[in-house]
Every structure is written in structure tokens, then in C-alpha cells.
Length: 281
Image (tube, rainbow, N blue to C red; front, side):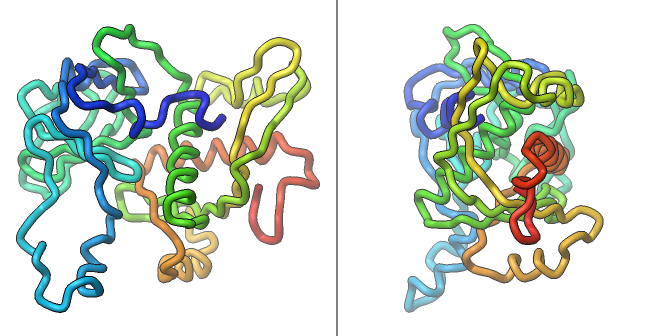
């Protein structure tokens, strides 16, 4: 499912409104009643590498960091940064490491990382953000992951004309190579025509929502290659050094979930439509 499942983060977060942040996996409150004075987009993660191309003198940003102050929310491609105020309900973690995993204290899911002593990075695939006056409405895990990843692909392809992506884990490993083929696919399914409803038990939900005798929904069509266990290493290395490929970083567990989602989606297609050249569809 595409943009119908959850509202894009850049559109849902507004300044001067109270928000509650929930763990997407279990619904536990992560941040309670936080009001932002500024909600700002971050530049691409490799922006500092390009400064030499922009400036004819030494890097003027060398000693400055893009860390949010109290009342700030900075939006990245796959994450957002918050100032770690006292209202953040995350377990105390040692500050000895530059990046420390932030874990949900109820279900132990990784939610993000501590970037510095006063900044926490949360991944968009792990947190649901709602207005404080709204009641919490859970979204099935697989649908949420599909929707958030699809949004990332669509936003980046539209803004930067980038159509190839590497899906990386927080451990630095590459898990999947994704090539966005098109974003205007319409899928139609007769109720009970596919076995996808029974194959998604690992997530406790179904592959796609269905309403009435016929279900229709928008989808993005992608080509992908798994990279776990050193598969497709040569291609992954080539993409790593290609400026036209954009890296997307998620928690390693989520990368594995996404790989399973892609595999089950491929299995639901007719055999003749599951592959294109060496890629899976």
C-alpha cells in the first residue's frame, strides 16, 4: 500500500501543535505532549561532502552541527531529530558511544539512536506521530513499513530524480538494492482470489487491505536484489560507488522485515511477472 495508509511526515507535522509519539510496534508512548516551534527539513546526509564544490575557501560549516534546539524537529529522509528534553520517555543509555540504540522500554524494539548528548534520532518506520487530542490508532506493521518506505522512495525520486536506492541497516550493512520502476500502479484483487491473506502471519496482518468483494489500491512497482549473506556483492559494490544511487538507512531488523515483505509480495504475483532481467519484482 502506498500513501493511503499513513500521512506523510512532512505534511502531518506542524509547528505550534501538541503531538504524542508512540512506538509503532506496541503503542507505548515515547514522547508526550511535545510542541514544536520549528519543523525544518534537513539537507541530504552527504551534504557536507559537497561543500568543497560549493566554496572557494575552507569549509565554513566545519565546526557547526545541525542539531535541534528545544522546540525544534528536523526531518531527514528516513528519520527525524529531536532535542532530548526531560519529557522524552526513553531508557537512560550510556553516553560513551557516539551512537547508542534507543529501545522501546515495553517491547524492546529499536526506535532510533542517540546522536549526541542532547539529540535523538528516531526512524520513521518505528514511530507513529499523532496530535495530542487524537486517540491512538494502530496500523498493522507490514502495511506501515510498506507505506513509509514507499513515501521515502516517492519523495526522493520526485525531488532528486533518483530511482535507485540502497537499503542499509544501522550496522552499516547493505540489505537490499531497490530500483523504482513506476509509482502509478493500480492493483485490483477479488476477495479471496489470492492466498496473500494467509501468508502474512509473521506480522500478524495481511499483505494488503481489501474492502468488499473487490479491493483496489495504489502501489509502487520496484525491482530489487537481496544482499544478505554476500548475495549480489559485486552489484552492491558498484551501486555503492555510483553517485546516482541514494542510500536509505533503517534499523537492521526493519531491513529484514522489508526484505520479507518484498519476497511475499513477489510470491503473490503470477510466475511470469516475478522477475525482470536479474531483478525480482
